Image (cartoon, rainbow, N blue to C red):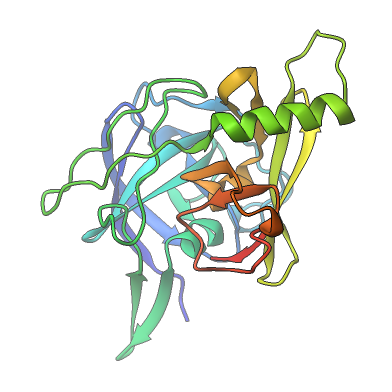
Length: 269
């Protein structure tokens, strides 16, 4: 089956729009946009790592100069995704497997023609809530450009922690990894393979961001560090203290989850 190319519309965190062709390719996990295709003034977060991406249409290393958040209109559907920015990408825009999996985007062959089907849409609050588009790492959320056919769903932070959960996390961090006061207490939140449902949450004490991390400010001065790949599965998640002690210390209220096990730490999307 051929890899489809469709014309899509992108909206940046500053509500600037552009129309461009997008290649849907599951050969790359990440979605990538060529730097010169972004509207002028698009906020780009630092992402200094160099990655070898075989879908880039070139051999060797593909330069990645940053990462940005985009709302993408695909036909009558709308999705939101983190996108790597590269000056070297052969295509204007590549929508990879991570974005396709999160929004149930599939490529189907019907009557000899290839069609892209988007299963979920951020405009439908019954399916999922749109994550807040943030200015940089700690900016003020802004609403995506409204659809011509329906209003966007209620806005929800990209990631949040309740005060009760933050207090418990800080208590655990101070016991396990005391700091010298130079760095704030924090945790690294990851999504890894494993568990009863194929994916699971993992939290460890940490005090410093790594290249490509998104850093979230939680109550009581707690920092939460999330890598880009994990963030795809965590958008809109709230971490709370679990009222049922038999189900684990923390509860992850994740709107992207389709099923979870009794422990609350393993899930599928």
